[in-house]
Length: 90
View (cartoon, rainbow, N blue to C red):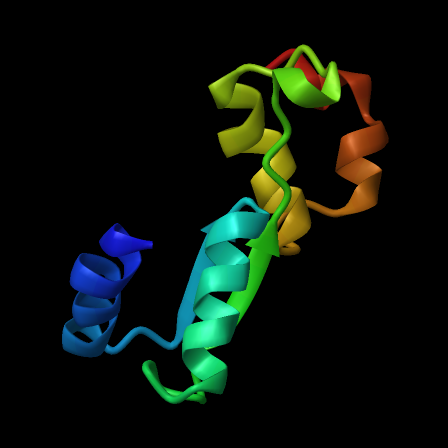
């Protein structure tokens, strides 16, 4: 909570992003709350990325998350590519 209130909200106000990709539910919830109470611009789009990890019993590497899961969640990879086994071997 301290990192959010002391650093993150100030950085967001300085940078003025149009969209923020939140990795995990905690960051998303913190920023939704900040947006609701007016601590950050209400026009900023917040996107919640699922933070797959060992807790979910999924053997994903950080590369899998960066190159497959998160691009899929934000629409940069369509479902046809996800189904294509050749895509994963690249």
